Image 1 (spheres, helix red, strand yellow):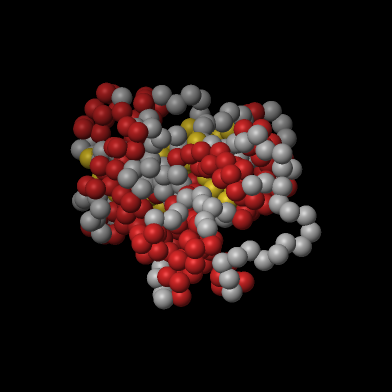
Image 2 (cartoon, rainbow, N blue to C red; image 1 turned 135 degrees about the vertical axis):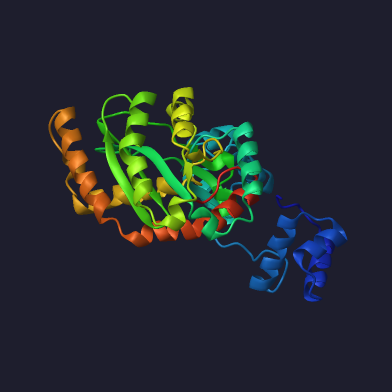
Length: 350
């Protein structure tokens, strides 16, 4: 809440209550003053020994309390607004650097927007319901999932970043208005499919051409079925297959294949890469790709040559991924579900 203008008597009330050990919340309930005002005065007392401002040295502030409240309100209403646009929207005479300082005094500054898949109210509702259903699952329950997905690996990524106005902390970081939705990009890339179960790495295969249901089924026939056969009996006899809701995954022909092969496919919430552990394997895979082969971003040649070399390198780094990556991800599932539940289906830190 923004600061209020208080009389000396009112400041004295806050001073007296604070000296008797009352918290800002208790003082707010006693007198009804804005919490921001109370915090500001208590801080001033601690620093200056008085609720009064110290005599200023140099020029007086160019902005009034009302100007600063307007700046703060505009910044937090539209967190993605650039500073120059904020100056215009707040009709401020302050310089950009002065506006930045005023916001910093209130604990607000520009931060990089977190990138997450785009969510709607309907998505969040389904994700929240899914989290409630799985809230009490233990780590061993998640060991019986085969985690799978396709991933596009590009030679380079879009370097542009988005900055947002917000206060420090995860509660602010993952509010929908402070997140940059991550849309799929285009460019020379290789599509891969992979899976893992518990801490056991599955196969990695290169997907050529535009992926359709028939090709997806061929990948499952040639990779998933043999992988299941190699699993220990305690896992092989209780398999749940996880995949997202891509069209090729939910097509009738694909569903028929799973039924024919007696593989149980679990229901999966929409737009939930934060809950799909293999998404985080892809992140580790890409990091290892650029660490192991630092010239990857500079690969030269036509699309076919780049794809061929990317494919070769990806198979190398997949085989070199540490086993504890998979184990740590499995151990994280209860915390992930809890975070999704607490976010009521919206964005999490994962």
